[in-house]
Image 1 (tube, rainbow, N blue to C red):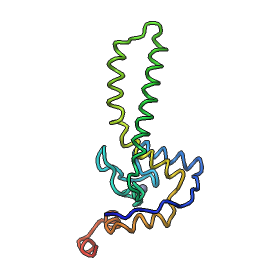
Image 2: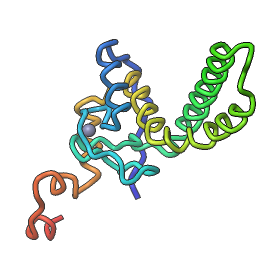
Image 3: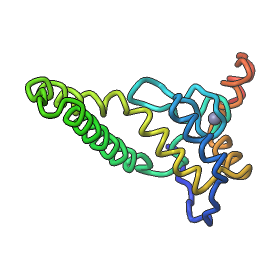
Image 4: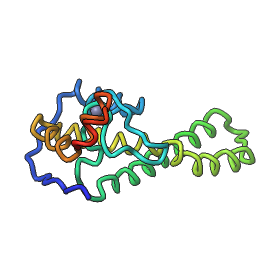
Length: 163
Ligand SMILES: [Zn+2]
């Protein structure tokens, strides 16, 4: 069981350029912190740590990704509204209601699945924008996993046994 992190550290926002970088990395399914990876175990699960920098993707907090579900649904609703508005405006006055009756429910069902890993990494990005990882915190993330260093530097049997 991983220990939880004390997240009462003061907020210090990332610069706009850095913030854009965090978001861009999330949108390409890379680690928002370093731009490397891997970060996905499968489409629905993140790895515990970034395979490159070792940052814990939940930042050591319980229920860290609850907000990402809200983010997923909020963006899904926004996409739904935009698609609906565009279809009505473009086709007015002959709106293809029958086609919309098929397309929109399909969108509602598929969007949260397709967007799932993006919503988690965007959530982490938003957190990093408000509280960038300090070198001390990164050290803490890495220190809780004996395997981390061996994962990155071609594990040998002797290293594994020592761990
Ligand atoms: Zn990383």
